Image (cartoon, rainbow, N blue to C red; front, side, top):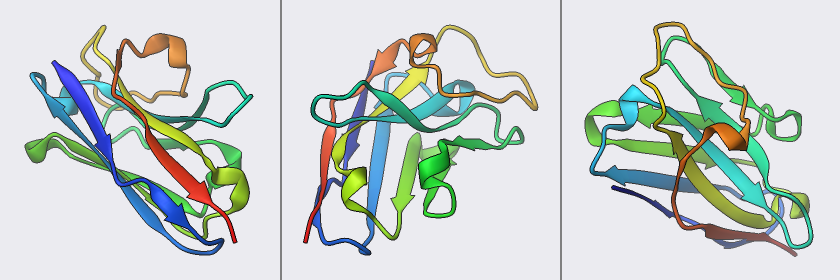
Length: 129
């Protein structure tokens, strides 16, 4: 049972990256899934999360309009499309799943990291000119 994140890299401000997170051993579509990030010297923060497919995606304020999270349940993949990247987006990015309960129709998540119990390794995103 694991999550595998990939897609990080070094880009210039204004450029884009797409992060991917693949699950093995469990189906991502049954659980809330989130993207989190941690910059050096800072606490881990939620970037986005998705519970039920009809519940909408939560985004932290600083990425609204720039980042898009999607999930392909059939392939057990979640993506984080990151556009118009800024230096303040530089961080290690993690995907995580809340495998404590199946999501109910219409349910939402709000990015509380304490609710997520399965974490992948991080993928580093560096935005610098």
